[in-house]
Amino acid sequence: MRKIEERMIEAVKSGRSFSLGNTRVTAIDKLGQSAVYLHGNLIAVFSWKYHGLGILLRPSYTLELVRCTLAG
Image (cartoon, rainbow, N blue to C red):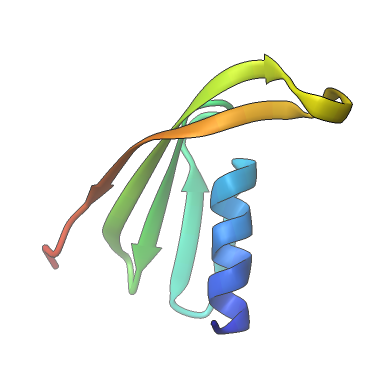
């Protein structure tokens, strides 16, 4: 896997915004959704469900929904 893909995945998992080259991740809201853009086109939206604090007092999330598009 390329470094840019690894950094994109980490940004999606952590709910942070990220941009490098032609890839951009936008945190729609802190605990809910992240959108992934490639060449300025929306390609995926990830929805996360927050479960509270888990092991070692870290927030616990599960992936609830992934919406992908081939448009653009």
